[in-house]
Amino acid sequence: MIIDLFSDTQTRPTPGMREAMARAEVGDEQSNSDPTTLALCARVAELLGQEAGLFMPSGTMCNLVSILVHTRPGDEIIVDDQSHIYNTEAAGAAAIGGVSVAPLRTPAGIFAPEAFEAAIRAPARTAPRSSLVSVEQTTSFSGGTVWSLDAMRRIRDIAHERGLMAHIDGARLLNAVVATGIPAADYARGFDSVWLDLSKGLGCPVGAVLCGTEGFIAEAWRWKYRLGGAMRQSGVLAAAGLYALDHHVAELARDNAHIRLLHGAIADLPGLIFDPSAGQSNILCFSVRGLGLTASAFAEACLAQGVRVRAIGAHQIRITTHLDVDRAGIDHATTVIRSMVQEIEARASRAGPH
Image (cartoon, rainbow, N blue to C red):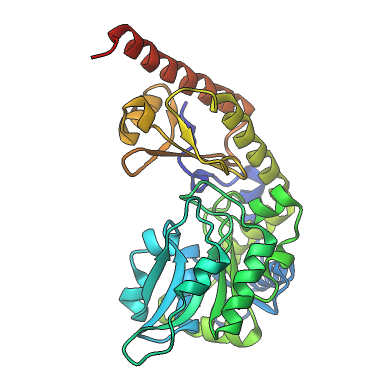
């Protein structure tokens, strides 16, 4: 059996979720007559303190549609340099929206409000127009760091003062909520768009819900349709989201706790390098450069012992806990990583200096 810590996208629907999907009342989503989908959108909009919601096939589409609504071709959006929008969404903003992306270099996916303000371009006929800023809560490839409420609000306020729109990539927003106790609506208040992923820690097979004002959602619907995202009897999928909100939110706290356990058990290992902010939610990143290994070699060695982790770049490892990993799985992963690092260090010690 593999302990799969590659991503929280690896979750599988629970028996209860499958039953809820099978019993879902359905209609036609495109004509606003699927009651389960409408119920999910209303539920998430209320959770996020927004006027309306729109069920989407994916978080990638949530980000892209938000960009398409908030910008026009030739504009520029500002994001952190390790964000999904910049790295893993196939340059959709550029390919479909004609929008360029200005990445801010960050140590853990969190950019300072001052750095954001400095990146806003002065109006000029020869320059792109800065039109949107996106905050990723929690960060993903940077290690699950949680943005502070104060920093997010300062980013939002600077954006609005300078004529930009403000967007939250909320793929793991509820992981931040359970880590801090701050309600999701408080994080989202005043932002122009925000979405919640259903297919990561919440354990659904597909889907996300994009929220904002009634006017924003009306325009988002138009882009959803253009991009081929409109569905028919989507209540079968939406039922999974409603079930997850009822039964799986509390499990996110367990996932966060599992990362803290794992982090505490391997933080002292020589050769592993952690950012000071590591271990805040359900993601843990560290460098294996100090072991003299590549990330891919480290990941392959873990997999050979039944633990799947993710190699990012030359030396970065990412571990993500989720609904399908229990305490026994965390203990096994800890044992594998500790024994592997200790063996590498022992071999190096026997070899001596060159």
